[in-house]
Image (tube, rainbow, N blue to C red; front, side):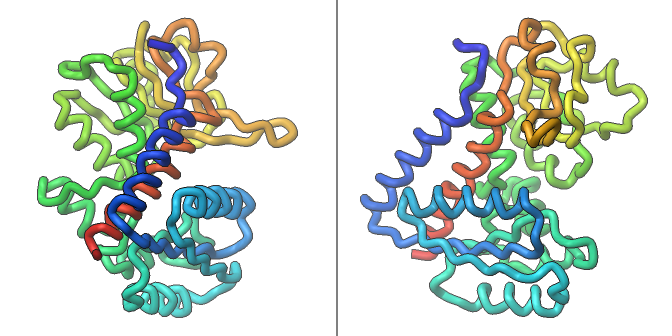
Length: 278
């Protein structure tokens, strides 16, 4: 197996399959995206999602709100989309401007239209084995790990994340495959000791080159979720890719790893919701 986990190639295969599925099942998926503020990265991500939707046959509805939009107006927009029978899936592009309550806004979504799967009810259902609807980011990461074709049973995974809630579904999916999993904070004082024991290391801390070769176990699978801009807008991950490359068994590049898969899983979940609604 190639050492580099090619998220772009895997995402393109998934998108091709979805294009066929939409045609064969005669679906008309509709995705609404709410983008608040002028964060350049968020606008870039939404434009990539829009392009991907148009490519495979998903109708894309864009709601662009000013940076100073009140919480009441955001909630009213969500309520309008919740009630619109044409809309199958709703996405709130994060992060939100600091004056808005992210938790309250995500909780206002109709759980049946929550394409990211981050509504508290949806996470609770998944953790209790009452739902097969998986949030796009964890689903994409699992598919990247599975593409290595390694036997995962009995392995140990460490997830480094600032937000534990977002990664609890991923820990659950790994546990389902008999992988022992720990979620730790980037501030953990014992971090090096824990990462050095990880057969699977998933890093999402938003710090360029945070993970160095001395922190990684020989032949580990490394999934780098981070995207950080350094000199002249050059995009790098949370892992020092060139330094750790010879030590790992498999690694996702940045860009071209987790990013394309996250978009592909958004499309996958939109099609799944459209099929449910049909």
